[in-house]
Image 1: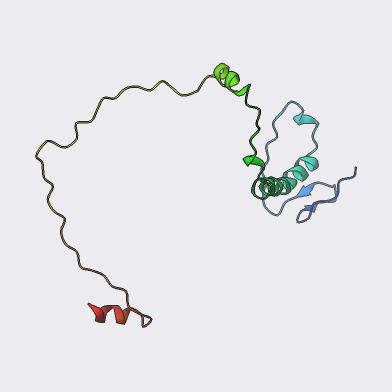
Image 2: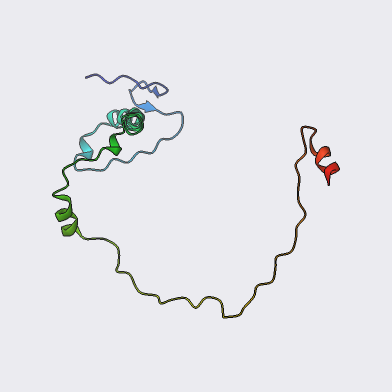
Length: 127
């Protein structure tokens, strides 16, 4: 399958891809030396199509909302895996406010009224 230059990217006379801005890509995995640079860049630019497809599946087709009726094995798997969270530590009960303590009443504030459609001058005339 011949690889064509990608839209928005230029090539040198030797066939190397030239980017309008630097593009840093990292490829991880056991076969990373076998991938040519052009195929890596092409796969990177195709990721947006995949992301749109996943969003369509989640939003419109409700793929993530599907619940299987077969739940017989889930309890056993979760019990074997355990949890990454630490055990809860009791912290005791808070004392709260002392008995008979009364808070000072809040200071009264002026009421702010919005004006009609005449702008800020109408708001200042109402007060």
